[in-house]
Amino acid sequence: MIVRGPAATPEEFARLVAGLDLPGADHVVGWSAWLDLTPVGVSKANGLRHVCAGLGLTGADVLAVGDGRNDIEMLRWAGRGVAVAQAPQDVLDAADAVTATAGDDGVALELGRWFG
Image (tube, rainbow, N blue to C red):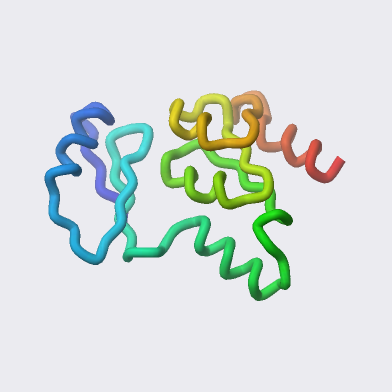
């Protein structure tokens, strides 16, 4: 589920969400005032882990590219986690590398490096 607070800054939204009691739910505040709510343990990283297990792959075989806080766990899990340049600082910090912005074809550039 995604919840938006368009009148709030991301920092205000994070403070508001911090006071909520959300048993059985994980949450991530996005880089604008939105909130991703998921059942505990549901994440992009766990989804990739599940797919990889079925294919006989590990995280070391995975390239993940992301630009949002809901990508941090995935970027850390993947063998190569790459943040898109316009991502918030905590996303950039979680990545192994940073590629160009989305507008400058950052994902395509990284795919070219990976499959080069």
